[in-house]
Each structure stands twice: as structure tokens, then as C-alpha cells.
Length: 168
Image 1: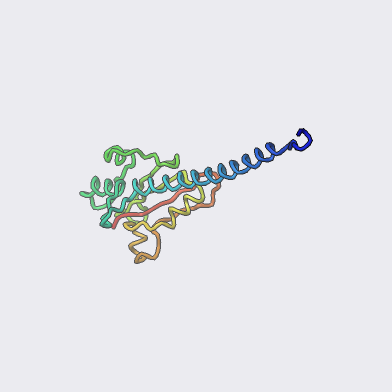
Image 2: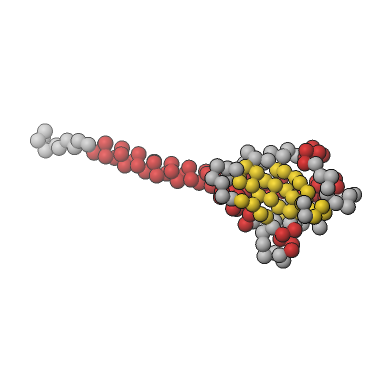
């Protein structure tokens, strides 16, 4: 009876290595999906804070509407002060990327103001530059053919920024 039974060595070790390899592949895939989800959430948060588009395509602009409401009585935006504006609309100037939102007057036209988004990676910068900013001056002037945002996305260390011009 003892001669008919073969003992197999190493089989459980091979099975264990197979299981570990499969778990490694699943873990790598999960990390990639989590990274993508986090990037998507940050872009969505920036969109919501700068411009939200409602169900009926009615624009609810938190930063933009706040500036227009606070400075609506003036003929131009030359008195814009980002710190005062963010405090008045009850919003922090910090963005989800670890950078800040900035507000400034367009030097070429005091009836326009620029919302800046700083602290962006190359891919996030490129995504925000190519996104259609419907209420921006650039988007409106191009008849919807350009995104309305500008910026330099060449920095690799998260120091990229995007500017979007709003106003008349």
C-alpha cells in the first residue's frame, strides 16, 4: 500500500506562487483604477468650483458668479481683490490639486477678469485646457470652437497653471 502512494513535493508551493502572481496583477489594476478615480474627482471638483453646469445647462458659476455679483455695480473689474472676493463668497482659494485659485483683472480689458488654477500636473493641466469652459470669453469669441482656457503644461513637477478669462 505504501508503494502505490506517491508523494508530490512542490505542488503547493507552485500553487502559492500562482495565487500570489494573480493577487499582484489584481493589485496593480486596482491601484491604477484608484489613481484614475482620484484624478477624475479632482477635475470634477475644480469644474464644480469654477463652473457648474446644471441639468438644464443653466450655468451656476461659484467663483465667476461671485465676482460678477460683488462687482456688478462697477463698470469694470479694475478693483478686483481675490482675497476679498473669496471671503465674500464664502469659498477658500485652495483647489483640490494643492494649488490655489487666483483672480486678476485682464490687463488688456478691465471689463474682463481671469480665474487662475495653479498646482496642476501636466495631464491635469492639459485636461483643463481642453475642457470647454462655456461661459468664458475665449469659448464665446470662438463660437464654441476653442475651450476658452490657456496655460503652460510643460512643467513636470506639478507647477502648471491654467487661466480662464470671463467678462464682457
